[in-house]
Image (cartoon, rainbow, N blue to C red; front, side, top):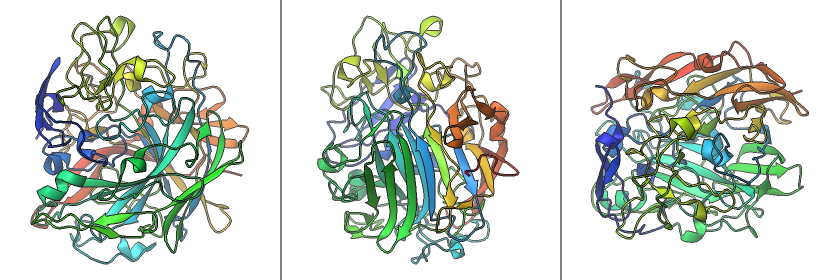
Length: 552
């Protein structure tokens, strides 16, 4: 069945009471939500911090997701699936002067979050068929085509958030571009779980699902003390959990050089960020002590219980088989950049200022009639994915008006030639990251690198059951190929070979065929109701014969 564009369908945005909204091209038919009722990340809004599920139509009743071009790293070395370190250099943004100049861009417009990922054990999460999960073990590998009895699984995303736009906490509704600080980056440890039994098809009971979501998130900022600001789990989370605190959180500057280590401990997986430029450090452990917890899977009744839990990595190694079987992506150890959220909204009619992208009646703010999406010669009337909009006056530094819903029309900022290309007066520099290294001394290289994008899960032209109509250059909502689709490159830097994302840049080694780097359609097996298997094409993936950008 060919996917229907979400703004042509009934879209359930579970905010407050979770009243459905009908969105159509050019406008959004309004329905009352009420303001956000509690502290929780709302994955049903295509939130940029949520892992994309493979069958979002079944889970949410409509498409939920976002564009996620990724790099994958493979190694058969024991520990490579749960113990690694990266070198990172944060981007520099252009000056804040003339921020709406046509052709000028900032990191928040291009990517709402850049993250490092890993598969995680969660015995209360999908597929809920096996109630044990031996940590750091390849015994957890199981193809759904062989059996539906996989261990419970979650996915960790260690996310970096760019500075300068609308401040946190807009996390409950607005998706994709919130900032912690006018000029500094912050980071958070996210663990995403899915409360669905694939064999019975039953979801978490509606009372609890309305509170935490069917796909729910444990969330904690990286802090200088290693202690969370509030409970990380979605049942007990408070506003403090999601409110940046410069006295407690690790804030980082544009251009800072970082070392990021991810490793398992007796109390759970731990992320440590050492800012080599400032000398500051921060960490977060996914532990009971920091308020991390499972949500007890109760498909009936009304209970909504948090089970304190130390989250540990799922696998020992990282290969094509070490996947989270409910996710659209195929990977374990990965770098990802969340694109396709920000859309320009320019013109004489001002977007109203709101705390959460909701108007006084609880409806999502829209790009007003009389304004335009896109820029310059490409400017055209707004359409149905131009919702959850904010005026430039609400931004911390870069006074750009815009909208943050998933841009499945492929015409937002991410799909223009606004990516890093060496023009630092107009575009940010690249988010640079090394290939990870594993081993006790972080001196063992990963054997292979790969590129992946989940475009087949998003494109309206693509049939994920057959692969028909899936393309590496997606069609925009005018039926034309997107103006641009970003890609990974590697470059010689002062720190050696580093990967980056965007466009071709100076000192580049290779762009690996630009969009061709994403390879061919990837066939993956998923469990269906009754315990059967369905084959779907949710990604393109291209695996290199080696890892050409190694450290040392």
